[in-house]
Image (cartoon, rainbow, N blue to C red; front, side, top):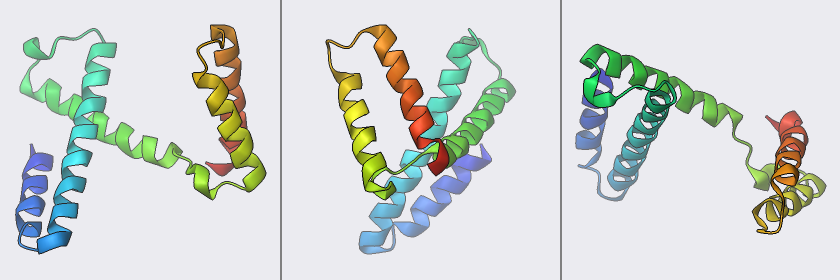
Length: 122
C-alpha cells in the first residue's frame, strides 16, 4: 500500500511539470503494473486464488513482485550494447527461435545457446 501511495504522490507532483511529468507518470505506471504482473505470476504459480487471499498475503506477493522486477532488470542485456559479432549471433538465434519450422527441441537448444552467449554481458 505504501508503494502505491508513494507512486501516486510522485505522479501527482510530476504532473505539474509539462512534458517531463508525462514521462514520469508513464514510468511510474509501468513500474507499478510490472510489479503487479510479477506478483500475479507468483500467485498463479503457487496455485493461489487472489480472491481468497488476505490483504497481508497480497502485500507479500506484491513485495515479491517488486523484488523480481529488480532482478529482471539486472538480468537484462541490451543487444545494442553487445559486440557486433555477439549481437549478430544473438539476432540469428532469435530469428531461428521465432521460425515456425523450428522444433521444440531446437528451441530449447537455442535458448540455452542464447543464455551462454549473453552470460558474460550480464
